[in-house]
Length: 436
Image 1 (spheres, rainbow, N blue to C red):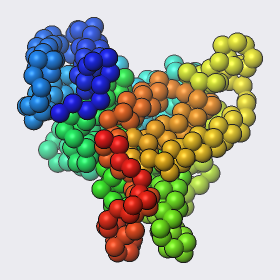
Image 2: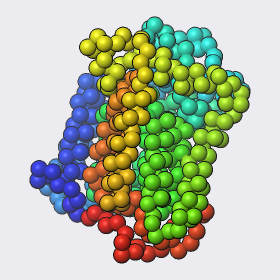
Image 3: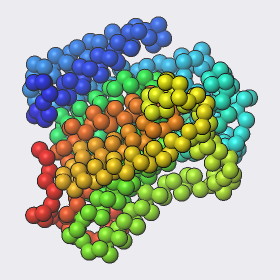
Image 4: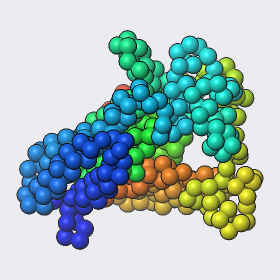
């Protein structure tokens, strides 16, 4: 089955060729760190699968099976090798966020605070050279990023293995794969989504070094799958969990609520009730995970998680702020009101997103609208980091192959009420078309 064509080639073949090729380039470049076996085996698998894709039509079950082996070698392999090597080398090329996440997990298990604390006596102190040590004075992650790692830490302690935060990233990667496997789209399309997310070197390089963006992306993919399968409340909980991991997940809420409100076939009161319930389901993960830390020390949480990334973090990256610094209109440590710019661009982004969903209620349109909002938010943020850009690119690349699945239907009349989170019923004549 051929789904999307670009230049006479299947899009999934193009993703495999580009991302698999780039991934191997990096593996060969870093062979002194990860060894020669991974790039050799990975190259053989990659070339074999690429030839299989170009010469044989169909046989998607076999193609997906080979892709799974390829992912195991060139995506998860480097992380596993790095985890094993760390027992001898300690922290070396890992990012400072991973070092702080691990300390935060340890502090949580001992009932200690993770906000408003001194990190200078921990393993994070080795990153003091970054921005003059400013980066290790604040823990700017939401608490779920550390809380989600506690079960893995407990398990490693039980089997007497050293804990490494990349173990958590591997678990979330598996969750992402499971979510993609359950997407109601053809197998070739799922192949392309896996390649765009898990084979993408822009993300996998970050995972090797401990960047945690795959955690938020995995839960966002779970939300997409549940939304497509008409589990509205569960989708809201998944999107809310993504937001509890990284605030970018919050940008999905207006789209979900907009879809509910556009269901004109339902009475206004029913739509209002559904909107309130959906918003509550979305907020639940944030309330459960952030609430205790607000009760314990709200000023410390606010300082670390909000003041630092919006006012104290050096301006830079790939967005508007970096441009102002590059043309010497603003120093990197200067103050600038980025929030009004973000809000001003989010408004038209959501207008276009909701307009598109009203015309064509597919997951592709939902993801496209979300990417518009995410880009508007990130481009005018104080620091548009490379790992944020990688996550955005991965989602943009998923959109072209998601046209075969609906988002939560707009004009469908449910056969039962919403509270159980599942909506059934047949599509009315006025329902939005599903792109083939």
